[in-house]
Length: 73
Image (cartoon, rainbow, N blue to C red; front, side, top):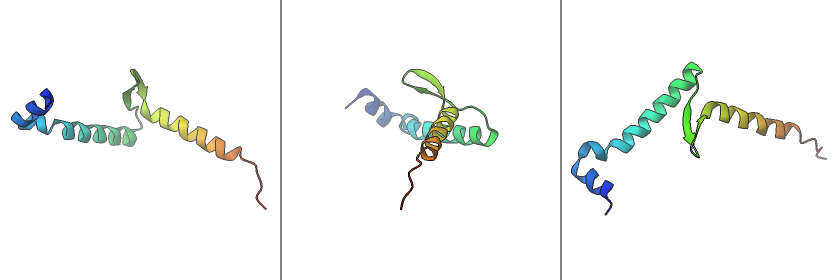
């Protein structure tokens, strides 16, 4: 058994910490969406604005769809 598991068993607050962090992240994301503000996260050791990254990938995927000029018969 890992040290974290042992601590979680002995400390009820620690046992709920993971769920609390997930709720906090969801709430922060929701607030960033509502207020049109950046939502920074760590990805591969770098600080990234997740909202901007998602917007850029949505634009790229939309551009890819538009560039498909094949005509179906």
